[in-house]
Length: 358
Image 1 (spheres, rainbow, N blue to C red):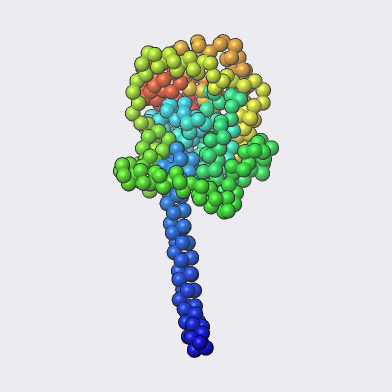
Image 2: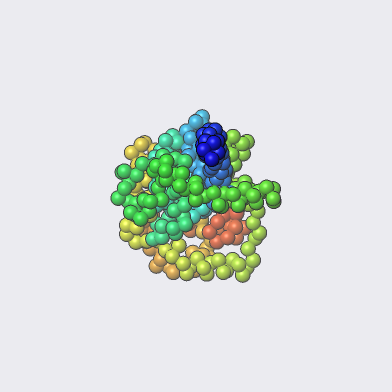
């Protein structure tokens, strides 16, 4: 019996190194696997396939590209109105001064949501910044909680300092600004599910969501990178039927989206702050309101335009304000009542260069 116990004890001693080897190998393998999954999630976040709209993840690289470009740069900031309405490549072709034109508008944008980018915009080295200042720019709304995803993704890849603007950002929104490596890792972990779904979808279908369509940016090293920062990619869209057009107008006219806020809304305060920061860094600011179709203008109660007109008059006393809101353009120039078609974009291109370079 004693001999048997002795043999068992020796067996345990001899197996101990093997057990430790297996344990550490398992830990090492798990770490490698976890790291690989996180890397895949990171790629899917940045290319826009995990979450819609890759501009959020690649704006930092865009500002760096502008900074490295030769010659003076003119940068457009705004919502889908500017995204669809400005063709920077066309404007470059029509500018005898050889300026660079960049369109970094984002669909659904409003001044409050742009706050985290202010320092990066300044560091882009742009000589002029064209800020969209349409009737939708100063609405009361500041986007849904889902739109704070934009802040998470931007702060995932870019440093953000909110000390100066701390009082302008709602306390409940500050948790969406990732300011530590732990927060960034946690966000990537939460993104593994949607990221892997899109990666598998890409393998099966052969197309990743983040490679085509409105709002997406190609890889920085690709040949389409520069063009996409000047002339945002547009997916093919069918013309609206008369019924769809009228329904669109009815929805917009009844919503608060085009009701210009009176007083100091968060969007107005953020807008003021942006202008002050840009001017303090010797950047010329030009304000721009692009055309809306006349049927939409007429559908909105006339008194709703009073606040916009007052705001425009206020800013026009201090800055160049190009107000094209009331231009009477036919439907051929519009994709829908608020977004310009390719013909409208061309018309803006041909007329705006001289007004910007007065």
